[in-house]
Length: 180
Ligand code: UP5
Ligand code: MG
Image (cartoon, rainbow, N blue to C red; front, side, top):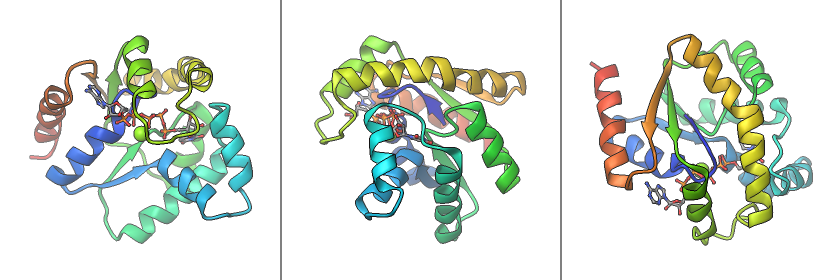
């Protein structure tokens, strides 16, 4: 699943998990847990997130692989990853897994900015300065991954600017058409 910062990925993943039995893996959540755990990479990850930069692929892919193994499930909803071409290439070559399809949450920047500034969950990257950096990295590095998957006809675009309930109706329709 891809979509800009604050487009509602986490919110809709929670809905999808409840209805369709996937394991939700948020790369961002895994990285934030790694900071909290006090691991040796924690300080590096923390400063990358604060700058809105993309953490090196090997770190993120390892965390995703671990979480996949620990889950005991074989259906995954990967949220907020891959964020650049290098992420994608590393994940696909290390795991041998390609996504069945990619949900793309399309939302105007001003709406995402408004949501992030009122989220109030104490995230160190939810301040205007970092948000602007996240948007820039998203446009420059993450959108090309969406283009890559579009060319493989794997992208399902969702209008993520609507209210959360309406967005979920559209998400459900896509999953229902996939899981027959
Ligand atoms: N909200 C949600 N849906 C709404 C709707 N339809 N209408 C109105 N409000 C809505 O939602 C954000 C807020 O909006 C919430 O308050 C929600 O209630 C409300 P949320 O569902 O949290 O949006 P989400 O798209 O998940 O936003 P998030 O901020 O998590 O997206 P990011 O992609 O920026 O964050 P992520 O955690 O994925 O990554 C953070 C950082 O980690 C990155 O910037 C990067 O530095 C690092 N990172 C990597 O380096 N590599 C990775 O692979 C992943 C992350
Ligand atoms: Mg999120």
